[in-house]
Amino acid sequence: MSNGSDQDWTDREALAAEYALGVLDAAERRAAEDLVASDASFAAEVARWRAELAPIVESAPAVSPPADLWSRIDSQIAPPVARAVESAAPAAPATAGLWASLAFWRGLSFATAGAAAVFAALLVSPQNAPPPTAAAPEAGFQQTVTEPMAAAPIVMEGGSSLLAASYDPSHRQFIVTPTGRYELQPSQVLELWIIVGDKAPRSLGVIDAANPRAYAMPEDVRADLAAGATLAVSIEPTGGSPTGAPTGAVVASGKLTQI
Amino acid sequence: MSGRDALVEAIARTADGDRAALKYVYESTSAKLFGVCLRILNDRGEAEDVLQDVYLTIWRKAAEFDPTRASPITWVATIARNRSIDRLRSRGSRDMRPLDEAFEVADGGDGADVMAERSEEAKRLEAALASIDPRAAAAIRSAFFEGATYQSLAARAGVPEGTMKSWIRRGMMSLRTQLEAA
Image 1 (tube, helix red, strand yellow):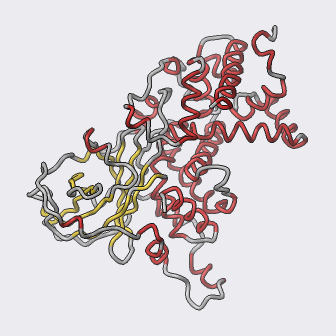
Image 2 (cartoon, rainbow over the protein chains, first blue to last red; image 1 turned 30 degrees about the horizontal axis):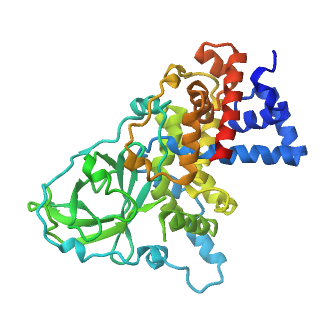
Image 3 (cartoon, each protein chain N blue to C red; image 1 turned 90 degrees about the vertical axis):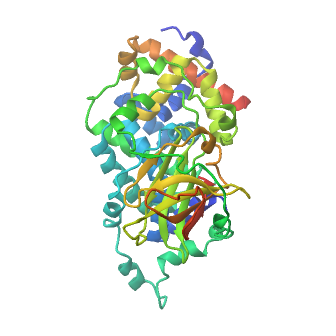
């Protein structure tokens, strides 16, 4: 084959790019691995390509994993008691204290959630996360725009976690995963609110307190789901707040930040 | 503290064996990483297995994360990508997807307001990918997400292997030029 337009690139430069991308067959891959081991400048070129290509990975759509997956992971990591024994410290720090202590949590306002305002009651209705068989191929080759995701751990007073919320602007998916429990009466539900700046709380809908779900967001709410907005959870009667503003106690909150 | 900083700190604490920190990493990244696993494996059961393995890997390798070299979300997502591709290779070549979709150049439909929110890193890369031959850009994305070789990409696109090689090489060269100019 004539070198044609590839002539500006040496075989070695091309190999570094192809190896980093992962398109080589097994024999070529082994040759590249040998070069990585023996040639520092080749290894550096591969590393540079890898770092440059890496952000492509974020263009995959966010999909809520099954609710029990965390407990499956947690059961496989070393029990904390073994670590506490190893430690010379008199007492292992309480895990909840970690996040409660971070500056991250400062400045969360429980007060703003009490402000009265009239809004359309439920802006959204929950829907199940799309099945991956439908979502994955569709997302396959889109020229998807990669944008930063925003996420907020939503914690109760005292620092224990109630929900984790994340918003993926590339795919317009707002996912809420229950991470803790709040004892609700049978006639009560959890309702999620968004508070932007000094504006009144706006309902994001009644949240499934038991299962992770993707929630559809109307267009005018999406712009608010960016870093900086505060999410708060209030206790409301079945069906959600009848007034469009929080009527019950605000039991948890968190701030959306870019991840 | 930004979410990015909080995630960097959580990974650092995970390296110290803090389970609550790993749980935070899980809560803030698992939906994205599950999407990566599904994108590559196209099988929910396998994606769940791999995702589990990904967080066990993060638990063990958190100390290797260097926040000066990659964003935390890119670092964890890269682990998900690598583990998924390992799994894909171990099952052979079944489930080959057609490449036709690869050549449909559709942007995500995102408005200017949303575009403005993108991080500099991602903005640069996506702009560079948008500026090169769309066939090359699609093949590069496909190779990246599936670990597909020249042979497989060529078969799926219905072109000779030499043609696919030329597309990708020229595409990567243009990509480098664009990234250097940006």
